[in-house]
Length: 280
Picture 1: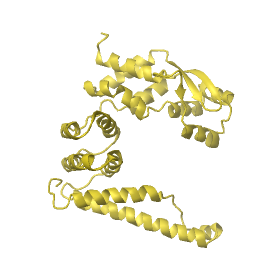
Picture 2: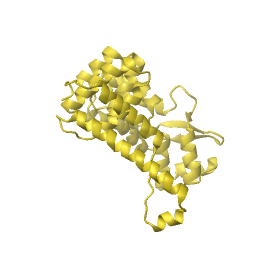
Picture 3: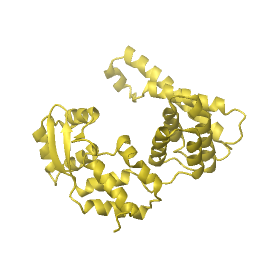
Picture 4: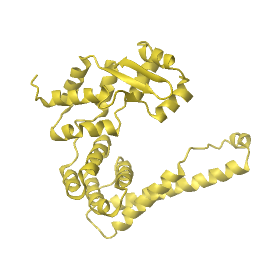
């Protein structure tokens, strides 16, 4: 295959990142370390090495997938290549086969425990390539809006989020996304939070002529959840857990701060869109 083949170029870039990129090792995040210690009970480097090298263990495969998940930094490093070429699902398979035919070694760094050298198994390579979503396309009108209203750094992060999301690119959703980009990139210093909330909203199908009503309905649903959180907190303060369980009351986990943030963002979007018919 030619050295300037788009598939080969991207395969080499992915390999570079998997094999530590610009670092001497792949750093394991604090969240992953906490999971390993609390859930898997792995508290020694030897225990981790044993799990990773056990080809018959599903735990080792899951651990590799967790550790080598392509985070935003990984995707930023290859985004220029992904954006420059029109990759297809077939290309994804070609790139995956290229990488699986190679012996990819990397060094994992576990804070407080030490480093270990590993060979990345083919199954993990498959997972990494699939999670990059290189064949997913964003509507050209959204790309154009980002070019007009965002700088390169923000645009790169937005493009990655758009491609990773399963948002439904219907006509009304695309018009709403254009409006969000045009109005809120200049107005806010935290546009990525707005984008994340709207992408979450747009992963569900909404009636083409009812997008504003759907936004209001989602806001009301979140307000209801917040009210439920208040009632749960009161119940937990005033009743023993045994009594709550005997009553058959189900306590659900509700992130109040996240819900309040989403309500504020949806409310801002709804208010800014009053009287604007471009969404429908």
